[in-house]
Image 1 (tube, rainbow, N blue to C red):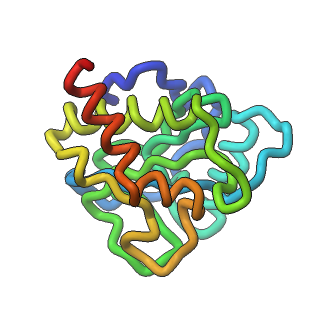
Image 2 (cartoon, rainbow, N blue to C red):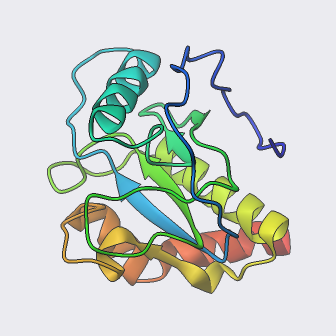
Length: 172
């Protein structure tokens, strides 16, 4: 696992074992998702384990995403970066680094801590995988879906998140 700033590893959130084989891929872009589940007061680790159980119940080997961002802005380790993510929609997720923010961003605004973590993770990914911040899109750019929610999608489409990533990368 490459070093991601502030990352809570799978052992710390008590992820279940991987079930099955991953499809290998090489990361070429970053795609943002949301969990589409409103906050219910449960700790992020409990929520992540529930998402993992749900995804594995769909026949996937693990939680669909490479990185997840809790409601408090803390990043969590998902599946390995060299493993293609999964999606219940009809796009080919190979080449995509999947980052999911926990919450329903059609119903609520993402918090500043989550946005800050997203910017930091995208900047890290841009540097680590040599991909342009311009390769940042929401799930809805690739499939007919409401993901990552209208409010988060608007911040991706208007370029404000990409601008923040560029500012961080430029050291301003």
